[in-house]
Length: 89
Image 1: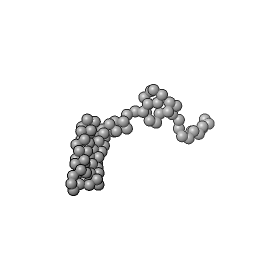
Image 2: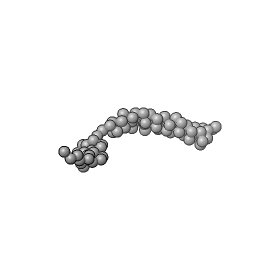
Image 3: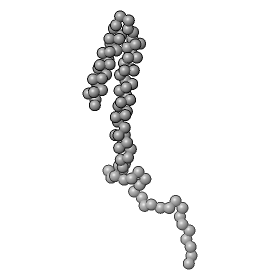
Image 4: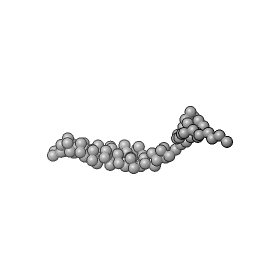
């Protein structure tokens, strides 16, 4: 996937160089060409293709001190938030 991105940026970079070096081209046109044809579509594609990996990282259990635990487990015994009242028989 990285090779494809590098290749696409190379092609768009050449397009931008031709735009800047052309007889009626400009540096602003070259920057817009590189940004709108290269960086913007590449960043959107990279974000969309990385979505499953982000989702898997979010759903994976967290690691605490080398052991896999649930996010709400701290290694302590569970207790009630308020201690129950003791009733006399």
